[in-house]
Image (tube, rainbow, N blue to C red; front, side, top):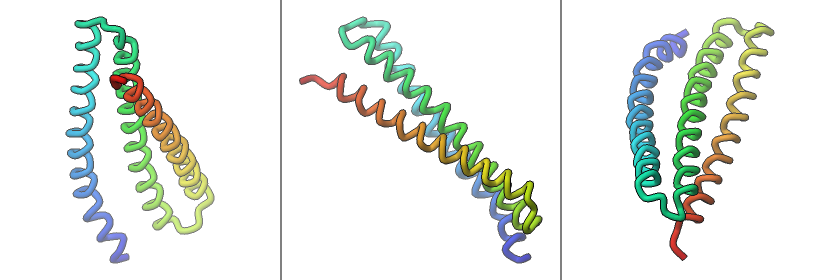
Length: 126
């Protein structure tokens, strides 16, 4: 019971800090994507299509990270429900579903990061 109270007390603080940090990072990613798009539109150099793809990939990555953040919060909530409900089948099923979705979005994020690496390599001067 003390652990549950400690979690209930600390969790909002941790979430607030994590959300604040995520928002700062998110703003940086949005700025970078906008800068890439602006440069691409302004110059229309041979790399314009790769720059457009990189900007789109950054925006997609950001959407995936936002979804992952929501799933992490849902995972924490389900873990709390499991602590309180003990061996409830519905809670266990819900927790397993959130874990599955977290695994999928993490895999999607890894693939998107790889795509960004390839895009960056394609844009480097030879």
